[in-house]
Length: 135
Image 1 (cartoon, rainbow, N blue to C red):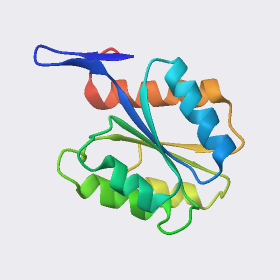
Image 2 (cartoon, rainbow, N blue to C red; image 1 turned 120 degrees about the vertical axis):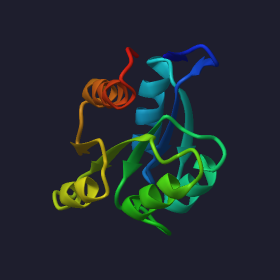
Image 3 (tube, helix red, strand yellow; image 1 turned 135 degrees about the horizontal axis):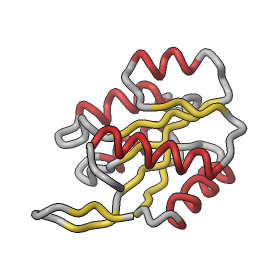
Image 4 (cartoon, rainbow, N blue to C red; image 1 turned 45 degrees about the vertical axis):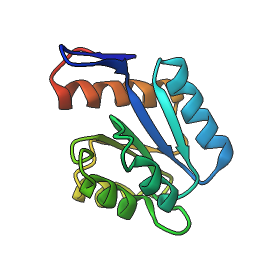
């Protein structure tokens, strides 16, 4: 998946933050197959560090993670220069997490267990809606 405009042409970037290695790899692999450049974070603290300077187009963020939870990590990432408008898809098995995700302005919420194709489609749709362009 590429972003095209007059000033740059590059693969879209997704940062996947999930403490469960199997789920993290599933999400990252699905996005890579869909054409994304992907970085993986093992917890919220790792996600904050990886996002700084890399400027992901999308975050796929678990809520319950060690060190820093996904909601706090998302808020901190959006405070970083250039990361204030990245798309955020929150993924969680905790039903109460949806209200928290919406409160911080996430673009979508996906309940675990999830269909990988559905998550991919929701990520693309949120990016299209946010950017106003065909992706």
